[in-house]
Image (tube, rainbow, N blue to C red; front, side, top):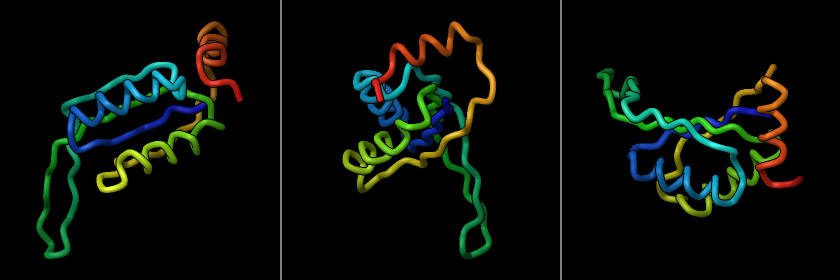
Length: 105
């Protein structure tokens, strides 16, 4: 099991992605953090801060590629940042719910 992290440039894109992934049973649920900010250094040495929305969803590790392909297909011109973090331990009842309520593999 993993936590999928999806970083979007807009709240609307985060909502669309969340609804799509839940509807297709690719994630169990999602936490949306709307006031995240990304800070990076530009090529000219200056810094830029941009608002971001972070979506964190619980899913099965084997569904990562399906999620990646779906997002690449739908958002090819504005692909959000996507990565996963392993869930090492989880409450057994919550793990059972995740296994039962996401896409069967």
